[in-house]
Image (cartoon, rainbow, N blue to C red; front, side):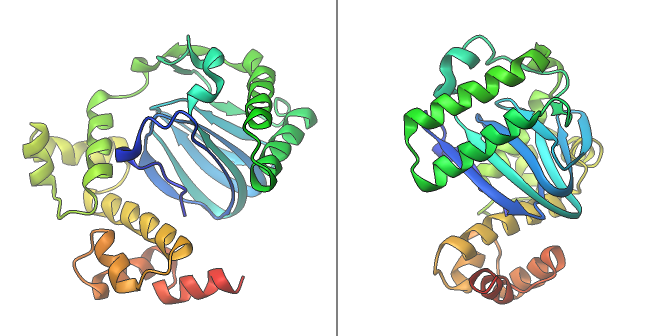
Length: 266
């Protein structure tokens, strides 16, 4: 399940989120926030722009705003996931907003005991007190300790604007009945061109990508609301509960009902 950024709620300069997630997967996406992942247990495959790496215990990744990134759980993983507005550390990102990292992955030797302790402190502060000054101070300290390992490049070198526009479009319209044909018409591209982008660049067929996105949105609603499953299915763009149940089980090995029960009885 992804504590996702909604495209129609962009511009929150105080946005900060910290969660511990088990067996986290999410298809390629982007948002205007910074994202830090730290592996607590197991391993997870992280892709940022054109770079992929299997991160294991004690390793981390740093994703700059508007980097295209995805997560794939290999066997078992437990991660700390931080998502925050670059405005929270404005003096750090002010001159780096049009940049990205040449190597977004931090090895265990880089994430020394001091940095890992700071990451846990940041999570605990957010969960227990969420004092904005302490959160900002810890973020500045973490970024300051990691900065010597950052090699910056112009972000335009690492992502395709067409892919960005495509993913943003789907993020906004996933609740609607969308197809390659409708997206191609709205964005002014051939549907065959967009199909090749999905296969060759994003790594999923179009329908598979949209279904994965919708199911992740559904997981959030199942865990954070009491909405009936029929309503959640419609909210996430599925035309019927039967189709929703089938795809949900294909991607999670659980029905929506069992998923909700599992959350209440961990």
